Image 1: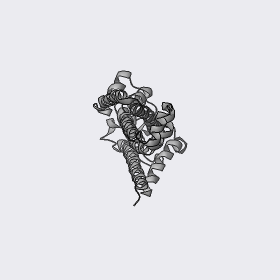
Image 2 (image 1 turned 60 degrees about the horizontal axis):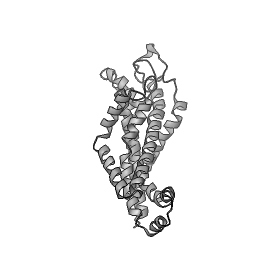
Image 3 (image 1 turned 60 degrees about the vertical axis):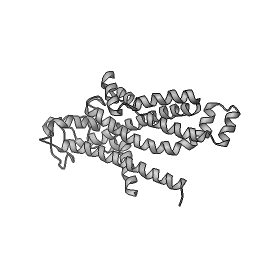
Image 4 (image 1 turned 90 degrees about the horizontal axis):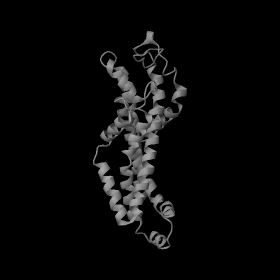
Amino acid sequence: MRSVWVLAIVFLLLAGLGPVLAPYDPTAINIPKRLSPPNSEFLLGTDAMGRDILSRLLHGARWSLGLAFLISVISLVIGTTIGLVAALGGKRADWMVMRTTDTFLAFPELVAAIVIAGLMGAGTWSLIFALSVTGWMRYARVARGIGLSVQSRGYVVQARLAALPAWSLARWHYLPFLIPSLTVVWTGMFARAILGISALGFLGFGVQPPNPEWGSMLLDARVHLRSTPLQMLWPGLAVVLCVLAINLTGDALRDALAERDHPK
């Protein structure tokens, strides 16, 4: 399990230090060295424009992981707020909020994100908006479920009878119970955001050239799949390992919290 944490930390460090570690400019075109195989000069080879793949992977970590972090945090804030509104707003607000949530859940997240990004046009901001709008529902359901279980506790009932403002009630009596469960959900949604960014990038709706991003790197490499398959291997492997490390970290965190709450 320790190796899982180490792998997750490595990817997070790459997101922060990748540009410092990159040996070359990721956007520098070098036509004479195009489609070079891995060698002592270019450890992972070069792409069709002669750009160093290792440098583009390291810079791409900042785009892929940075945007995934931002998107997952935005979705967390939106979903938690909506879930608390459902829990604190009474039966009518609860019914309206949850029917809206169910409506959003009826559409596959990635398909809905592709449609939204396609309508808004390719670009980073449309990518962020599309994945944030389609990623808040699970947070809302968790926040609403825990909120309903908490509101029957004695001190919460007393706080409501004392006409404590809704913001204070949520801040002091609901959020402490929400944070552990939402943290576990967030790790899974962080991984899903990475997959979503890569998928939209591969379809051409994500981060635009010449900025390196793992999904757009896959898009650029697909033309040369037969002649130089390693071009697609490296960014694909980065996505798989990163998502796997984050998911396993979330599982470990969930088990740790369950053991803490239910000690043997």
